[in-house]
Image 1 (cartoon, one colour):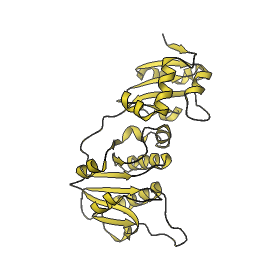
Image 2: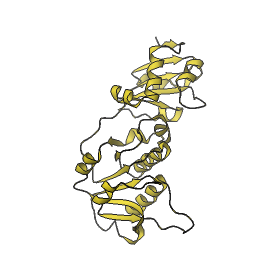
Image 3: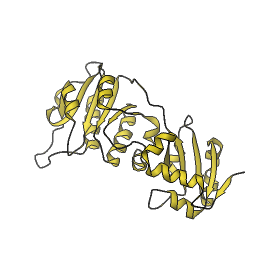
Image 4: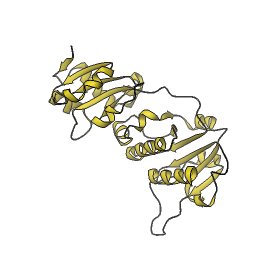
Length: 250
């Protein structure tokens, strides 16, 4: 028997609201909110989740109900109250966070001071698309905030994201070549990256501040993207995407 929730003060509804708005609460419970039909349907088999939907969505969630740890039908009023989006889709999930790791593979990205959720989500999505699953974040927006989760378009489920201090980041990347993106670096197209099978971390900072001095002092190479003099810089998501494609495929 699936429980129907009709009150905005219901404990489950309040739990969802707290997960959306409160970062410490998310990490205390090791859960986050996933909004949107396509993203919810893309939750991998190995990720535990609770399903929440409106009556209008019932016929389209039968497979998800079978997979979910628990399922709840929400009234339209309750669904509207617990969603972060302006126009709710009538479906959301509360998913379990992945366990953070103390080590990672030969190729990774490091996000240094990325505060824009859209940039963060785009970067995670791009990294996964290019086969890089290990993502380190330092002094950045929470990757499980609702806007990051939505903009990652499911990438958050396929990336191993670890948020660390600068000290911990330096420890984790001690055996890797570290490349940072900076407008004053060498042209990324002037170096043959694919000629050797090197372990590397590509670091990018915010458009306004760039990579921190801590990471800059650790860099083995400082790279830049060629661009017109009419434009001073590109945002972090665009810059990292272009550099990764160059390093990995050209």
